Image 1 (spheres, rainbow, N blue to C red):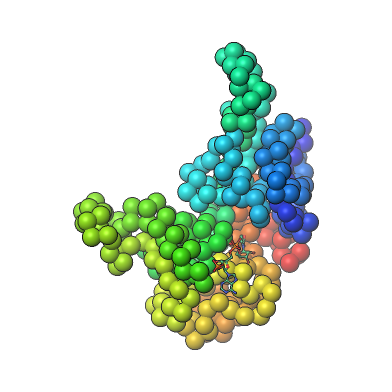
Image 2 (spheres, helix red, strand yellow):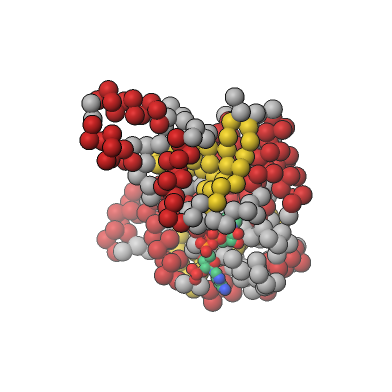
Length: 324
Ligand code: NAP
């Protein structure tokens, strides 16, 4: 039977996921279709439960619903999605997430109260975050990430996924954001998730830090205001933009004179593809990765979760770039 996948968001009309996934189905012989679903802010829960009831196989979730979906009690989160607090990929109909099966279980238990009033609390889907692994796979096209020093500009949704991905791979991350409090909050969460120290002597350092409140030098993630970029960028290995700066205007969030030839510069912005940051980086001879690669790899990973097949990354990339 034809599988049904799609993307829910608002707005969603311009999503580039449909052609990318269609190319993957064509190339792998998967019988499936991929649709756009515009879901308004107040209807997220109904949409997820409706998709489950309609036996839709999987959904991507995009702006502004990633956090709302992660907070639904009826969506069971994988570890990465839970840490980040955002879901961009839902799987329905897996064992344990089949609505029919679940209500049959309820009946068998004779749980009549739950049948009507509390059914929503039962899992209908499993939620993943493939933005994190997508960003990592994009960067890994050009560099190893473990042990590297990264500067990440931004502390919004994309930055959260990228910060956890970099730190999880063993990089240190300077999170630089216009609203420094958001960077501080994200840095605290990342440090907590990774145990707050480098790998060596982790236990002793953990103990010492809990006594003195933490040593900036040993922390995986730190937070900085935007004007720190001049200082922190030159010595970094990896520079990532995860702000919206560069989308509307031809400006870069990173001062051009802080860029160096040894940098690997990754811009999550993909409209335009050639941002001012990417151009500035190319001009100094740095290595660059554009935002389309993150989009391709987050889609590739969703395809792999849904179908169990290896994603045809180059085909998906070509289909996406044709539309950009
Ligand atoms: P978001 O949650 O709204 O976060 C926006 C970020 O940009 C915040 O850190 C914000 O700082 C910062 N910012 C906005 N205007 C700024 C300005 N004038 N100067 C300095 N900083 C500014 O957005 P998002 O969802 O994370 O998306 C960020 C970018 O990543 C977008 O371009 C999006 O298209 C892209 N993205 C790409 C992919 C991909 O697959 N390639 C996936 C997801 C997102 P404050 O905290 O101070 O407001």
